[in-house]
Image (cartoon, rainbow, N blue to C red; front, side):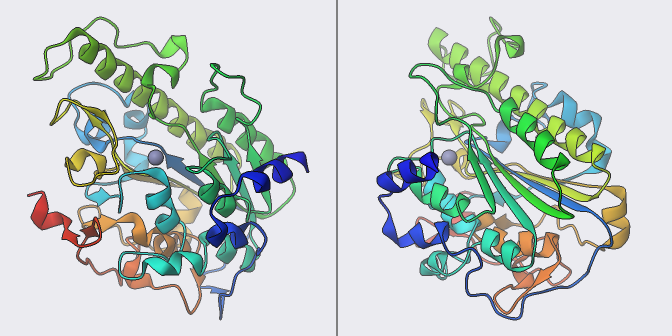
Length: 359
Ligand SMILES: [Zn+2]
């Protein structure tokens, strides 16, 4: 395939490149802890640079999540979730693999996609992020481990941009394909800079209003408005995915989280996320929301720890739990959905206790 050859040419991180070819990994004793009868469809929406602070459903003062609020009673909304890092690769290479702060090197030892493949799920990776380049190829390698991977942004002309809704269109088609057990990962552009390029004209909702901010500058008002519009568009994307999955009438979950947060002139005069860590907590504080179908709820007892402190370097274990997969490598004490869940210290920036640092 042309796409794959092109990507391989650009691979800069050889250490994660085995994920592209080794579909099943080295997991042992893989089984289902609960076998659903009939069709299963799970969707993981990977958000981008979305700060929990800016979501209405998390009590932001602006109405940035009207559609999620309409279905609020169908959602589990987790209040204290953070990312382990402040940029995409560093965070997702932990969230999607066995790597965590106690054992960062384990990120080379197995991914959630491999585990799903091994457990006989059909896996899909659909991305609108660029597939190549130093910042992207590591995540691309993980995605290429899926049975099918699609990079919808590859032919994008310079200066043009596509919006996340192409992911929903693709999902709709995937759900029509054969197969009883599907897991689809959607890697969005979310609310990444440049914010005004992240949504279509019709989502220009906050326009000339002056947002609440201590930084009184015209260009800052514009940027905050654009960011909040991008959040409203993300609200539309998440709720559209849920509606699409509902139509499939399967045992289903849709999990949404952001890879990290973003500073948008909330605490300091700055917008974006940064690699020099620990400047503001908004780059760590992320939304984390789960929707479940009625028959999924009936079939599987879940223990929502909505106010427990959680860091998504352990997301591998939570996802395995969500899919009812057991393996020697899976540890349900690290799953926020499990009765066995245990809170633990959240160490960021290699050695800093997050909860002591940001009080
Ligand atoms: Zn990111």
